[in-house]
Image 1 (cartoon, rainbow, N blue to C red):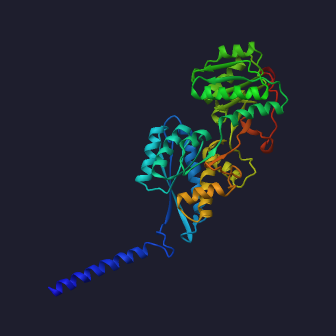
Image 2 (cartoon, one colour):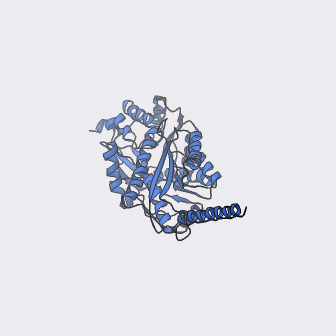
Image 3 (cartoon, rainbow, N blue to C red):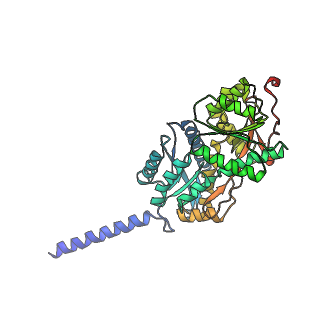
Length: 408
């Protein structure tokens, strides 16, 4: 009996010692659980209607992770060493619902430390709601500032802008060019188009502009003759166009066919892809597009990222490389905070800075939003060069655009 009791005591002691040993070796000398990697999850539109953008952004994020790992990883003070970053990428299929599912899977199955968002406001806000539910740090871009803030995720961070900031740019360009204060607006007949139209009309009052034509169309119709007739009748010299690349290319070609000589044509959404030039050819000359990034930026790493993107895709992008700044901020903040604790990292992002990125120095507000300034770029002979703001311009705006019969 005594022997069995003694044996039982020995077994208990062995179990306790083993548990203590496991506890000791599972923690560093500072009491922090050992960790070999920083787990970052993301979802991108690798399939579906937005796959072109999703594939580009996935490449940008993979490059950002590869670049930091080539330097040994991210230094985390609480571990006293650098940790390698591992990126887990899932396909959101261009769907907000799937993006939300991907986010939950990244958190519950892959146990990621942080999440980087995708390319679309609705996709990102749906995913951010899930990250908010599980209290996981979520950093994103390409999400309107007011939509990001509406989610109220305490661990949310966003690098982008708001529609009125982009719309204001067109008026500033025309004012700087000392052009007549008129701007016709041609918009998609949907929620986005109406929202953009309202912003343009409000700003027109502020800048003292008149809007000679306001018209809406169904995306994908590729037939703009009735709209162009109105523009010609109103003698509209300046036009704003909102729509997909294929629609913009069709509109431009038809202005040529119908002899409508606009002096300034600006566009958002469809004007920046190289596919616009491939479809419209030299008819794309003098069209002005919005954008966010360019290799001519005087910021560390911008030229290298621009060149690497072109080498990989055989084309440039003035949008997707913006996403390189999200992991840049995240990795710098981890090193500054000295921890992987999300609350401390977000606090550091908001209080410290500006943070060094390929987009220039970024400063976040108390709600976790860092506003960036859009740029305007003008097409000429297949080249898309920044013309606004003046501080980042590689070339001067060509205004007025020459009549169709005087182009080379």
